[in-house]
Length: 193
Image 1 (cartoon, helix red, strand yellow):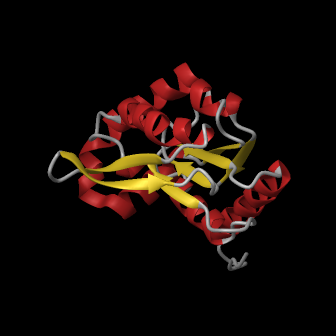
Image 2: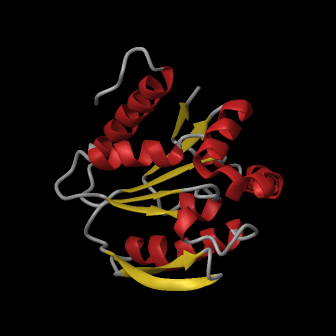
């Protein structure tokens, strides 16, 4: 996987993606499920895109971002519950899953997308690893990154849209960490500077 040797972030993402791709290969399944969890700005989306680009199995992996499912700034738990019911559970039962994109501007759910159970699946986002989701996933990744780096990346990415919601979102992340122990359920921990 390409990475610029002088960029510590790119090196860490590339190394993390290689570890995840190796873990997917080791599962020896045609349609493995990968969960990528971590706090806001940790690098989950970048890591998920790299893994998708370098998916080691036949056929492309399906990438579902929880950011597209959460029903607003107070909806972490509700989004994870929808992803479990509409994506993970059907996939694990070899059934077609369907999830709806949440339109943050309109404040309602919009178009639907299908999830093919015969293909690999990557679900990424804050809250992705819970005791229940862990039972239906083959590779579970926690992305660890220091708070100043995470905050800078998240606010550089989302700017004034996210800034007023940082603390309330962080409170949901802390609740998730205490209640669900995503690090304890992870099969890999990837550290991003």
